[in-house]
Length: 159
Image (cartoon, rainbow, N blue to C red; front, side):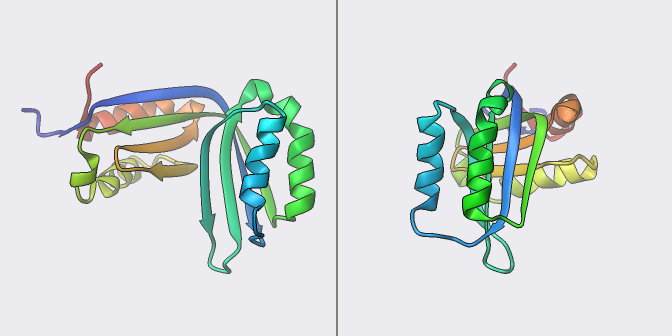
């Protein structure tokens, strides 16, 4: 046994854009409206998080393919106009790294192990999302290999 935390695998999804709409007033039905609009434009979203800041303003974070950015720009401008976020940020190119189970639900403190590992290496994570069976990190593409090496020091997964 290597002493590393065993995982089911690591996946990568590259050539993405991360869009952050930060600090807007939560409105009834707006999340559904945002998702519907992307569907109407036939632009798939491959990552989505919703959070609230210290002022109870909402933050919406999502990824789309770089190839869809030009088509999405009018939609992003429309959403920015309607939601009036304090800031709109776009990061590209980015990659989503996802480490998945098995049995992540039963492993207390696992997310902390991921965060601590990346902090020890002073690596920047743009967004994090977790579920009962996976932890996903959105990172700059230039940092992907360093991220994978850092994670491989503490975690083990089949190649």
